Length: 436
Ligand code: ADP
Image (tube, rainbow, N blue to C red; front, top):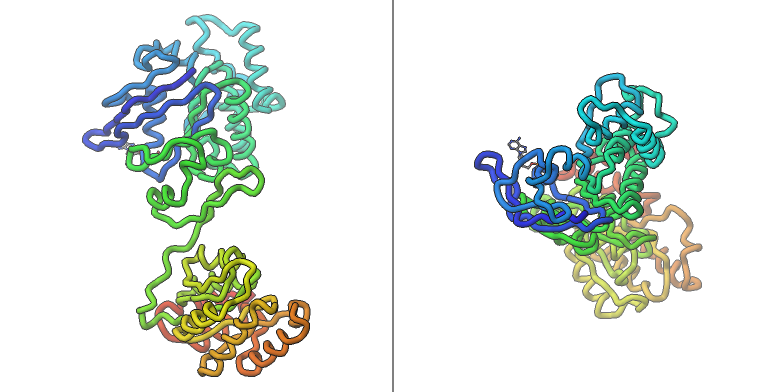
């Protein structure tokens, strides 16, 4: 049955909680309601399940206004799985699921064989058959949640509403429950609306999403249309990276640190990182987290370190993909490097295309800057120049300071730049690393 929601509004007293909410859900679709805390998700679900009366607008189910359903009709049409349904008594699982048959029974009528058959099927679909005689109070969170869904299915509803059905479950149960819900929509044709707080799960399982913010719809449609970095940044006030799921292409959201602090702050030291091929992503992140202003270059567009620098909002000198570092980019790199108090040379692969980056490190050393050269493993294996690369690297090592690994780097930097408020975190981080 199709649900149509038109210009819906709701107020708690004078507090407007839903405002002009309009969307529809087709039969067989699984729609996720997402949005930050307090955006009105639970209120919306309560209005859809008629627990709350809207202050404006309309909801129809299968063309019939929600307000016109009798209580019994509604219970036969719609099942609701609310957050943390609590059944304190020692009912057996079967008894709990049988409760779902209540809308079909007369006042003093007891359950028929058909009711028991429907309960058996509901237990089977939800994978609860083996729990039939167990007491509901002895089940795990995931099992209990499946039983509550089985009870909802025993109602034989056309519409299923769920409020954070997986909020306290581990990732295995989350997947199990949402797989089940999705199957109910696609295979059984149920119309499903679920409030979900985990954006990645919502993107992965839902056909469509409705993003709420302060009671209004900010975006609505396919997960790729709704879960854009812009939308998430606007609504959740956090920086994220949205990438396609490696297998299914659905949007996946990764958190990013906030915007890098202003380099005009005299207590913030600048470190220029020379990296490439994945050698510097972690270093850039750690230094940035420790409160340094980090710059990087020259990196090829698309290189994983270039991606990391972009994700971290780090100023970077970029070269075209698969092109050697040009004289122009090299000059830009030298200019950026000149503003740094120290240089870190990560364990980069040495190729003819990036030897200018080693030259840049040499230049920094000649200018009197500390140059930290990381070398965990002998450079031979990453020298693709047949010798010149290693020769140049040896020169940099002679002019700079050889560093065994990241921990040693962080310790060296903490010693070199011991002042400034932002160093507290960093010293802690170094200490933690040293203590391990
Ligand atoms: P969400 O589910 O997105 O976290 P809710 O629908 O629970 O949001 O709440 C939306 C807004 O309504 C919040 O500002 C909340 O404080 C307010 N609210 C929720 N329940 C009540 C209530 N019973 N009385 C007054 N205000 C409420």
